[in-house]
Length: 112
Length: 115
Image (cartoon, rainbow over all chains, first blue to last red):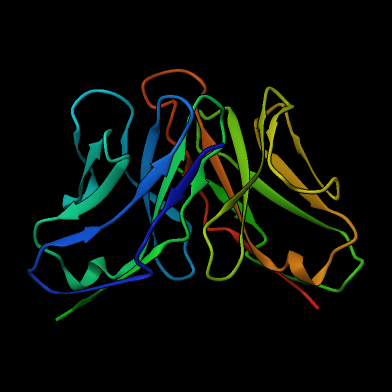
C-alpha cells in the first residue's frame, strides 16, 4: 500500500524567507511523486512531479522539490516566499497503479 | 484551452437521496479520476475511468458508481446519501500516453452537503 505523511499541519514564514514543506512517502515500487496547491474554493493546481532523473525537480511559481530515496522524502522548497504563496499544499504519491494517495495537507501562511 | 470543468459547483441533498455529479476533462485527455475531499483532509481516491471502463477503485462502497462517455466526460453517482458523504468531490483528468501521462489535472470541485 502507498501512503504519504506531511508531518506539519501548518508552516509560517515571513515574506522573503525560505519556505520548506515536508513530505515523506511509502510505496512498494518506484515512486511517482507530486506536489499540488489548493487555494480557497478552488481545485488542486499541479506544481511539480518527480518520476525519474535528477533528484532536484523545478516546478511552477519558483517552487522546487528534492527527492531523497534513502530518507523516502520529497520536500517542497521555495528560496524566497511571497504572501501570495499562502495556501494549502498537498504531497501525493502513486506507484504502479493509477490512483494518487495524498497527504493530509500543510497550510502555509506567509506574513508580510 | 478549457481545463477540467465540473458541475454543479454546489449541491444540497437530504439523507437517502441520490446525486449525480458531472465532469468534462481537459481537452485531449482520455482518463478521468474522482476523489472525495472531506473537510480538513486530503483527497481520497474513489475510482478511475478509461475507455469507458472502471480501471481502478478505492475503498468506497457500491453506493458510489460512475460512468465515462465516448467523449471522455464522466459522471459520479452516489445513492442512498449519508451525512458522511458531505464533502468536496474532485474530478481529475489525465493522459494515458505521452510525456505528460502521469499528471492529473483537477477541476474546482462540487461541494455536496447532505442534510
